[in-house]
Amino acid sequence: MTTLWHTSTNLDSLIEEFTVWDDYLIDTIFLPYDIRASLAHAQMLQSINIISEEELRLLEAWLQEILDLHKAGNFHIDPSQEDCHTAIEVFLTEKYGDVGKKIHTGRSRNDQSLTMIRLFLKDQIMVSQNHMEALIGALSEKSSSITPMPGYTHMQKAMPTTVGIWFASYRDALLDQMAFLPPLASIIDQSPLGSAAWFGIENFPNDRALSAELMGFAKAQENPLYCGLSRWLFEHNFLWVLWNFLLILWRLNNDLLLFTTGEFSYFSLPDNMTTGSSIMPQKRNYDVLELIRAKISLFFGYHDQMRNLYTHLISGYQRDLQMTKTIFLSGCKIWNDMVQIMTHIIKELQINEARLNASMTTDLFATEEVYKLVAQWKPFRDAYSEVKQKLFSPK
Image 1 (cartoon, rainbow, N blue to C red):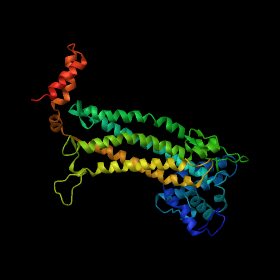
Image 2 (cartoon, rainbow, N blue to C red):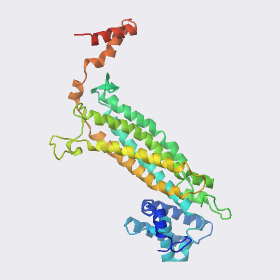
Image 3 (tube, rainbow, N blue to C red):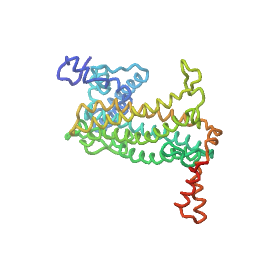
Image 4 (cartoon, rainbow, N blue to C red):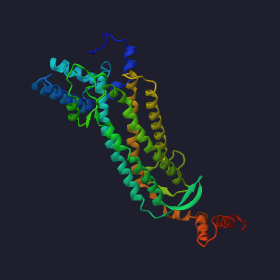
């Protein structure tokens, strides 16, 4: 396979396999974003007279051809090409010659990677916002319930609440976390294309503002070295926001695991959302909640891996950053899957009113009795002691 930049035409096979890793496979996900950036870059090159209008039309047609092949599953990235950037350039140069050789003018694979990840990240913020709004909507629908429910502290019954208040507590927590998304989206909405190998190209008239506009970015990210520093940083910031969401969902999921047990049975899921046992015919297992618990733990691991990969690096590109793509994509996939399945669970969750009403034992109202005495001008501590003595005195 043709290689465009290696120091040797016969790269050591073990070195190649180790350094490429799974990057060529991961880039099949990013390829449409790289095509989008390449189209904008080609238009920018034409605007500064690096390519002609006819060459631009040809490049646009050929890039669309690659995108069509990709959508049909017929565009493949060879491991020797390492990534989608090279695969695209090789396709253009081998099939169409000199015009294809011009597409890389004014950029590097470094800013290409940055740009396609940034475009993907912009889409992921919108997707995440939509998923969260759907989950918040499902929780809001359930929060209208006035069915009484025991409140717990230290895993013991404490005071009365309602099913609606319980659902609304998680809704409100998620709503507050949503406030992190708009400022994050604003920070991410800047194009790194044209920063090249993160030092810019001093004697090349890159119109970075134009390419940013053509891709739908609010502006170009001005400092080229900061473009490089933001590789990993912006992805990590996004995972951190998702991490906060998942902390809340983790507690919601833990509640559901407890409250759907036979000992509680406050809530249940339809039979078609549970699993059985190969030996115990009575079993209705909530495997889906157990796997949510496990996958949240996996996500926390991805978040930590992202942080650990970055902390020992100096400025400028280091090949370590290649490994962040797999981690980032894995985190995004788990997040999207989890929020959608949790939304489905909340919508289908059945409230077992009879069991909840039966659980409202008199001890839950002890504090209420204290404040009835306080309303009669009895000092709080005396009222507290009187109620406590009644509760614990021998019958």
